[in-house]
Image (cartoon, rainbow, N blue to C red; front, side):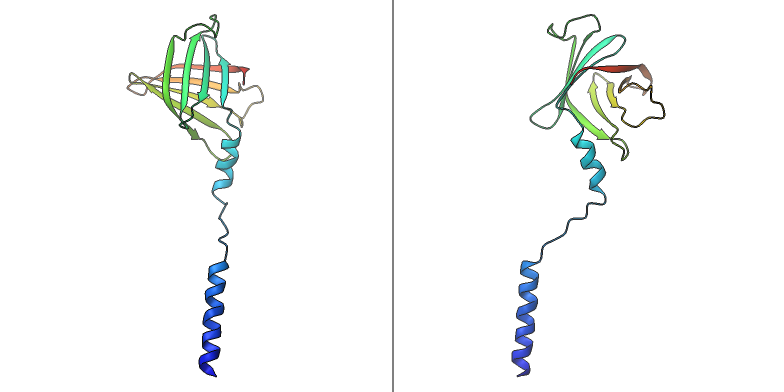
Length: 144
């Protein structure tokens, strides 16, 4: 009798484990998931000196193309950088996409949460090989 009771308990425990569903822990991924939902596949921004187009590529990386601010976007880009990476910045939805080219780092920041309502939606920063900032320009959305 005891053997049958133990066997039944053992079988019940095995069935419980077999049909149990793992509940994912979303406490850390909720903010980053919300961030990635807000990233457009293509965005075109205009700063004082540049027009910049950023496209998400099929491999998950980003492509950076830039023109002089007065050029048409249908013209040949003056610069193309591939393999950009999206980097979340905090949990409020801000992020930047970072590109490297000839020792310089190009970052296009998306400013969702700011301390000022007048803050531009995008900011371009370029740093040289010594991490000195050589360009910082706010940008407005032309098309997204």
